[in-house]
Every structure is written in structure tokens, then in C-alpha cells.
Image: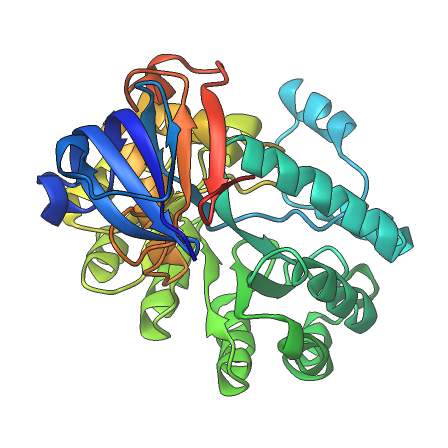
Length: 388
């Protein structure tokens, strides 16, 4: 192994307060030295030790790689017509998922993987260095297992979401579908996945059904997370805290009790600005969550129906503009917050021992990510010390 220095960094966001103070741990005129895919040294350039080789970044600003902790990139087809209809006044109900289920079931493994790789490359180009991939568009034993096995070739953060909606053929007997998900489907999925998730909301699964499925997953070694309160308020957040879910995602409709429960727990509130943007739905009250001491993450929710974006900078800009986060809070939530939502300590920050995952910006400061919405400011995405 050899040490490589990334020098002439104008502004470096480390997300490590011990290095420079403040939540973002910003160092001016910095150097990062990597070795074996990890950060071996970080600090002011004037104090940097010698390295075997170097890359001059020309005064650019550098941030930790984005951690996209909520994405649905394993599917076939698209739902552009549904989006157009919704923009013309038709409300989103979640029923469109069945359209994607039909296309996904018909697709070959090669077609599904090709689409996943396309979206993965888009994520990387937008500065994402770690991403989660959910199943949930197969909704059969065979189709869920194959989706997960494909995803596992591209990310270690694989989530079994057989409980996305009730499969069409079980529409008249939803409890039988719950039994299938918690039984045979889980058995087929478990070896490919790290996480288990349930869409607990109106038109999907109720709290007791979610508890049954998540508990079954926990018993076979999967870690729980949950879609909570996107369309209406349920007890999903309370269930998330009860089961120590790593994250409760969406969190659009929250009571005071929900906010207090999250603030007193390790469960991260993962907010998905692209979903509200693409459905013209109310945004979650991110300011309320932050002020209450809740850990917040921002993710893309990349999916073909309600948030077909792979751009974390876009989501960050929307979070600042419409969810009232500061640019610093939004950046932290899209990096360190996402890492906490995946219960990862090796990503989302740049300090000694972390993965050397970072993004070089074509901008003098991270502030430009929100200041210049819609402009591609990602100059390079570095994963484990190498250009992706």
C-alpha cells in the first residue's frame, strides 16, 4: 500500500468537529492523505506529512461523499404518464406501484441489472458514494429474491421490501400476503439482504401487519427500517422506536408524541424531498425535527413513481428552500445523517480510518450546492481513494 495525498483543497468539509470545530468540521487550505482506500491523515496543508504521490485539486472545495440511505433502483419501466397526469391534478395514492410490479416481473435479470447500473452510475455522478437499494417491485417469492440478489452485486446496503404494497393477486386477502412476506418470501430473501422494510401507511400495511413482518425479519437477522407517515399519520413512528428501527422514512405527518419519541431514540428521521416535490405534497417539518434534537437524514427516494431522481444536490437544495434547513444542516443530513440511517461509522465523514469517499466540487464552497440549484457542481466522485 502507498500513501496518496489530495492537496490544494480550498475548503474541506470533514463532518468531524474534533478536527476543526462546528458540526461540519471545516478546514481551509487542507490536504487528505489516503492509503488502502481509507483516510490516513487529514488536516491543514501546512502540516501534512509526506506521501508517495499526490493529486492537486486546484483550490476546489471537497465534501464527504453523499450517503443515499433510501432508494428503490431495482425495477423496470417508467411511469412518466402517471407523473404527467398527477401534475394535471390527479393525486398520488400509491396504486401506481402495481404498474411497476407488472413491468418488473416481465423483465429479465439482465434488464433489471442494466437499469440498476444506469441508476447507480447516475448516483455516483451526483456525488453519492454509498447507496441503499430496496426491492419491492417483484412482490412474489421469486421476483423479490432475484431483485435482491442483483442488488447485492452493487451495494452492501440491500433492503427486503416485500411489504411495499399487497401483491395484486392477494388484493382480496391481504393477511395471506402478510404471512407470505413474513414466511416463504423472507426465507428466500434473507440471504441477499441486510435490512427489512415495510411501507406502513394508508393503502399499504397497518401497524400490526408491519410489526409482524419486521419482527419476523429481526428474528432471522435482518435489521429493521420503516416507511412511516408519508400519506397520513399512523403509529408507524412509535413502532419504529419500539423496534429500534435504524430509520423512519418520509415522516410527513407527525404528532408531538412522534417527534418526542424520535428525539429520544436512535431512529433517524429520513426525509425525502424529491417525493414531495414530485407529488406536490406537503413537505415534512424538518425545522421542527432538527430543533427537537431528532437526527435527520436526506435521501433521494429514487423510484419510478414518486421521486424519479438520482440527484442528491437537488434534494439538498429542496431541503434548504422548502424544508427550511440551513445549507450546513442539509449537507450534514445528506452525508453523516445518511450514514447514521444506515448505522455506518465508516462513511459520511472524513477522519482517520474512514473510507476515503469524497466529492470534489466545481465551486468555492459547499454553500453553492443550495445556492446554485440545478447546476452540476460535481467535478469528481472519489470512492475508496480512486476516481469513480
